[in-house]
Image 1 (tube, rainbow, N blue to C red):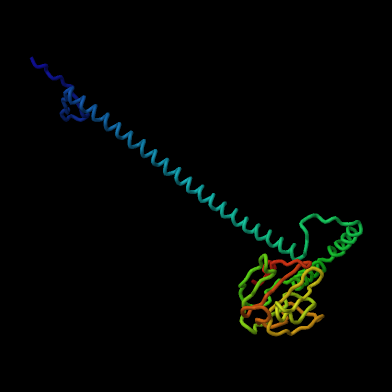
Image 2 (cartoon, rainbow, N blue to C red):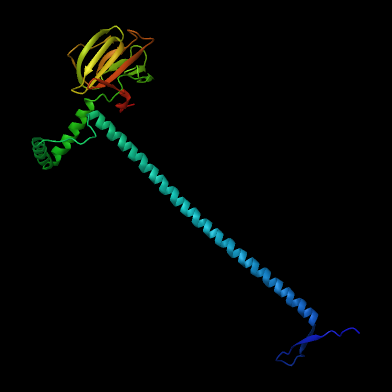
Amino acid sequence: MKKRERYISLIIAPHHKAQPWQMDISYTNLKRIAVLLSVLLLVAVFFVFNYGHIFWRASQYEIMKKRTREVEEKFSEIQALKSELSSLKRTEAKLQHMLGISQQPVLLSLDDITRNTSLNASVSGDPALLSNSEDTLSVSLERSTPSIMPVKGWVSAKMGDHHNGVDIAAREGAPVVSAADGIVTFAGWDNYFGNKVEVSHGQKFSTMYGHNAKLFVKEKQAVKQGQVIALVGSTGQSSGPHLHYEVRINGKPVDPSYHWINH
């Protein structure tokens, strides 16, 4: 015998005098509705959880992007500072080299300290004197240091083990200038360098200019930085028009390009 279906009745009775509304739901359909609502609730919870997780991931991603940008900016600043520091170190080394200053500490005598103290006291008392002294020293240092290229051209051969200077290729007849103030110590013929000029720039620096076509200076003549002293040629043992240029410090050859400030 088939079991009789059981029902549950929902009655809605409005406050006004209309007829009450009644709906009969079987237990089977009630279970189905309960299951459906449970499934819908689970789906809703699933979507809410995933949306929250996605939102959290997105917010973390934005935070990481911001931090990455900050790190990149800091890295760029550090690189700029490193570059500036390297430039300052190169400038410091070049100035030390130009001045012939050793990086080792220099021991001063009592007389040196007394003289320096007196000088500093007198100079510090007059700011204008200090400024003028610095300007004068800077100009004097620059003009007495071989800091310019002696001819307009390009370096065709660098300094090496068997090459005590650089070769600067230039058109024949181009003016050759003194790289710094000084005194001509030699101006004449050399079997290897042809028409050659040597200039002393003080106790430390000296320069040499070889393979010239024509010379405009003589021995013991004072020359100024930038003064024309010769013309580019190909005299002596030379394969073409160029200037062989050397810089020496205390008689020791050094790379001339290390001192150029206009190249």
